[in-house]
Length: 468
Ligand SMILES: [Zn+2]
Image 1 (cartoon, rainbow, N blue to C red):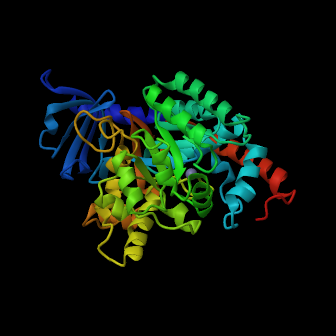
Image 2: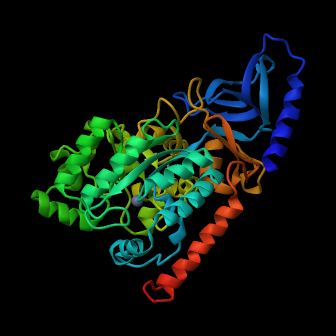
């Protein structure tokens, strides 16, 4: 019913153009009266601009003076709101939403709690239920594309296909038994089947996701690298993240850093997307640049775990491909990159002792075209430009926290909440309109997640396995 109501509103609006001549350009979607942040190379902003979409592509981004040239099936009047590229979350584990807020501040949590918890509770159902919830959270927070690493990624893919988002989905490979594989080789085989199944999907890019260097053997990392080049698919990995990793890799490689070790074994390639990259010196950064590796910067997860702050400003100076990520909802704990903006801008100022460091425009670049570069998708998404895929969000500038807007980048970075996202469009389709989901039933998704949370309470909290 909701969907029909909205469509009726759109069709009513489009009747404004019903008497127009045949010379008009027919488009499927027209966003008008928009404060357009294009995020193109010149960072062009149109104060009263328009964005026209035909099919799944952007066909015009202008200052709005040519509005009479278009006849639109659907019109959204932005009424001065900010219209910008959809946000791209370059690193998460969406299905872990069902574990959110469990044992948040426990030392050595990954090995003491998360791995045992996953061994007990990860299943096809859990992955589907958690991903559904994560998708809704992301779309409502303006994320149109995300990069995910988890198990049963074919289940995540089904949820992405249904809701209409875009995603790079990496099937995890790890050396010990997990829910969908007994060992790394079975993980690779699972990933290969998944890649074959989804390699031609228009919105889903299947990928390999070796968990980390220290949780996989050299042989496994090399095998995955070779297969990724052969199948031309991405590889996502947690890299240069922890002290434990430094120690294991130093012992394995005769004292090398995790990044230098990856270079030595031939596992740094342009197909690689490395999450975190906290422990990187100048030599490591030069290697990442040399091999054109994408970087996923996850500030809130990294400071919450007290692991450190990635040397992002040094990486920017070297021209690396840097995007924003949230990490999983047990780490971050939210999935919208809007919640990262503030922290990214402020913590880099603090660690560099420079109030001018990491200005808001750099943060918005990292969240949009920068993230697209990190995923090697900058020719398709990340900015509002003619020929790009129509992944667009509209931010409410009438919300009290957003009034007034003198500088849209500052307003987005220092003032905006995820809940200020009013409409989300992916691949030319409106998936969220006035914060209502149009392609999935949000209430049903929440109910399923709550039912699963009851199971978590019974199996690990009441038994005393997880101390809250
Ligand atoms: Zn992660």
